[in-house]
Image (cartoon, rainbow, N blue to C red; front, side, top):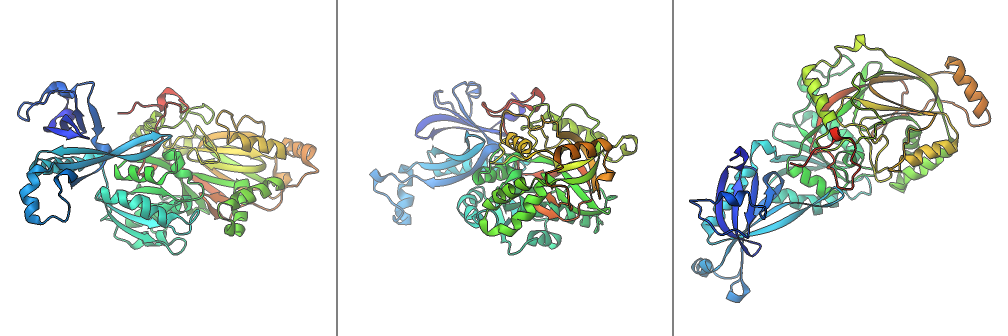
Length: 548
């Protein structure tokens, strides 16, 4: 018998009203209502291999509770005296309920309750204690204590309500100890993490959007460096992976990180990923100016259009999430472009490409191979001197680097659909100056699941490990061909002018000159990656893994 099938407990119970043979192993809880009852002393091995059995993976159990079943036909109620209750409890079945994950489609999870009735209270207690002990299996890595930050003003300002009504009951069911903090200003969580005693927590959770997550990300990475003697990180400082995982309860405007790692921005689903201890590592970019660290980023770093939209939207916060649509429309009409020079270090691994039409799903083997390389060659900068940098000068509408697909409700497949979460690279997307109509086609294809948004002459995409950008003062610094093309096609249109700003995961970086490095699988999340659905784009075989 396989090691994970060692029987911990065996017995005859009623499951949802049907007599059943129930088995508890180190990794599963299963029952078979069609098998003949056996005895605990001689468990029927055939039950284990029965095709008619129902099985719950123990790592997908949310929690277990006990309750007394009170039959109205017997006339007992909770108001009975304790003496009467003790005398008559043998007539009343004793019940415990197991709550586990139920997949209801489109990456959405919900809890399902299964009721088990025992003959007596002793048997009931044995089963409950055995299941709870099984949930403490170190391989499951389930959190016991969490630090939760709640953003009361993010998105539609529903964070506190979402947390109280949808998340707290689930954390209580899972017996998780929670210390919750409602933030009252920007960077409150970042500052708090610098001084707090984090040793007593198994993870940190934010209730909010991408901005709140970025705040926790930066706070945790900076705190980890500080604990290791690096109070002022610079380009010579190698980031250190924190021990704590970060969880996200989506309550923001776009929720890009959740969409790209879970597949849906559903608070209950995200809470269940946290409860069950799901864990995955994702890449992280460090952004430097004058060799000093500015911020860390895991999703989008965008200059030009995306930077202009973010900066302009700050003037219209009273509009809520609609401000992004309004600012996006304004900046689209402006059709502004910016002169600049991009230098980048392309990946030397050619097992994936931004246009290979694959998808990074749960169990992605491209990311697994990157982790193996990281373990084999832990020094990220050991080969930089041997590799060749590429340089492109041009008149850019956008210079965008995405370290994940950047899915959202507006773009179901993301800005770069084939981008991987943990391959140690970012997809550098260069959009050169073009007409409004052509740029509209490009933006529209970002929303279309079937189209290739990179299939334009004015768009280039490169998978890179590192890049730097500097603005150019005038057209004389451009290549001769770039100048002639621009003058011929767009002399009458709006011209390049002052510098843009950078959009870093929803935060503005004002200075245009940056140096960006990618750190492979630096950050731990409470997630498992997007699970493959029957109707999901299948991608390539290496990016698929059967459910275990």
